[in-house]
Image 1: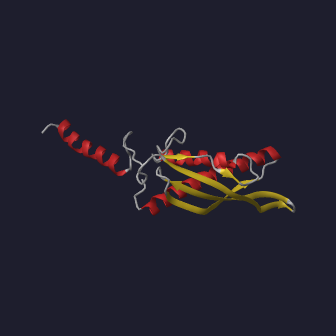
Image 2: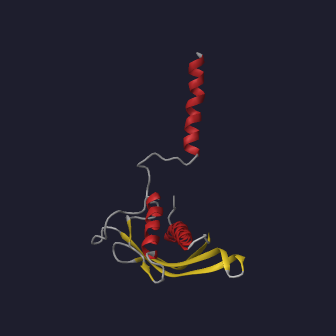
Image 3: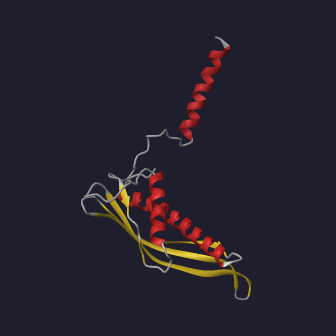
Length: 178
């Protein structure tokens, strides 16, 4: 047997094992796993004083669900897809460390969401109440820097809650999440 043939006998299975064991999937092989229909994510209702929190949270949920192949683009269309709606119930901020008395250096942001997944037939498929999480952020040298850090913390936390909600929906729907 030629040396090149022996080499291919070992290389081809090795390449196959690498791609099959690392979770790699070719494009187009994504499935929605637990969702029978695409899910349209509406802008969340905002009950906080944080400007745009509902919009920011919904955008992060769209990113998370899109990565998992479960989000549909476009507008809510006469029963064409399931709908995930949400409410940003509350957002609180507390100081967790101080540089000196009355001068915070780090704060903790806590976000509470309530979500409802409604099927295209109008039936409630899942409801998540008071899903919460927290994220720490640094207080900047100026107000603008602190505001940017807080907004980034809200965005990061919304992404984390989006992941959590996705897996909760998958688990409670009785189907496997990717």
